[in-house]
Image 1 (cartoon, helix red, strand yellow):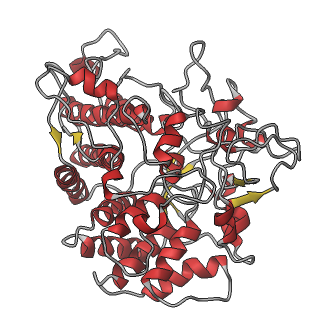
Image 2 (cartoon, rainbow, N blue to C red; image 1 turned 180 degrees about the horizontal axis):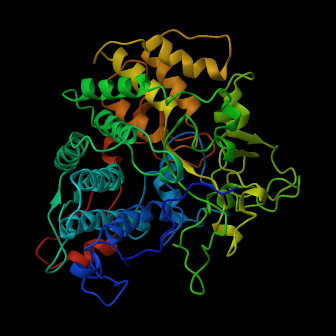
Length: 512
């Protein structure tokens, strides 16, 4: 089945991180940049190129899927793989002992590649003669929201990062800002993008996958709630209520199809990173290009190794097994349990690997039909979209903000829409604890849990669902360290520290 795909254009730029190579350009023609990007058609190529790094997170210099990197630091999935040396940096961040020479380098590089491309769009926009005001604003809004999205990832993982809104020159270094300063710059940029009033609340047809007003609102809520910015949380609630009032968005009635192809681009989708298998051409280097447009490697990574149990599922590498405690937290009647957890029983019809539980993440597990139409490499070309923001999160954000005192609204109804879809005919009381528990059940494997636990640490709530009380050594001996506030940020990749040494702006390493 053909899926909407706005990221199908070949990459225009070859980029790394904040090194001397960061602004190296491979020209699509022999024309100077000012001439090539003087037409609206070519400007739109640059816009598509700014979206392109979104697809790279699953495979870069190493494997960096956003959802898994986040969730292994929480309490719902393990790392897995063959042993502790397999994707070593995953195991290190899971145990809060990341080191500069073994950290998520690819995530850093991809995000700064995205920042650079967004800055390009904003520069090229001024070179196009006769560009209408509406088109100029739409292009600008997309580039600025995307730029904040990339910076948000960097900010959450590293906190104290280089930040710039015009591309670098000279020795290709820039000032490193403290996390709170980065927040202030990001939120000002996002507010400016929203104020352009250029983005539609949702896209249709082949434009699905672009940033929308609803996506910008969700990004605003995520950033302000993570920062616990009391001066802006009322506005975040207003944005959630605006999405809720939009008739386009609603929960899909059946949670079990949410993560199937039939559930993509539905009424619950606010923002997905789009992958496809139709004629997908991602392939392993050096013969092919693993950054080409196409599918994702995530299902291969997280499926049972050597699977022989049925003809529909496909085998994988045994990463990210779901914890037994995660499966057990669900009521047996909760529709989310089996749609989230593929419980096949330890060792049944596959080769158990490290930290094996016999439970795999059904949301993204490999099905053979999901890469059947690729034309390059089956490992890299599953068609599973990565869900970033969906309407269920809108409802729970809004309910939480009301309960925390940042405005009014039908919070009990919003909470129980999510709860009632999973457990029909039942309701829960409107309490902050119940909202937090609902998030834990709703978003397993979606990269939300860890950041929730960290931000709740800062709100001083009395319900005990906080990082310092939950992210502690386990009884299996896998996690031996406890989370502390000093572990909020991981170390900056050592290569970035080294490349800036002796230049105009050096980098200060995070504590670790």
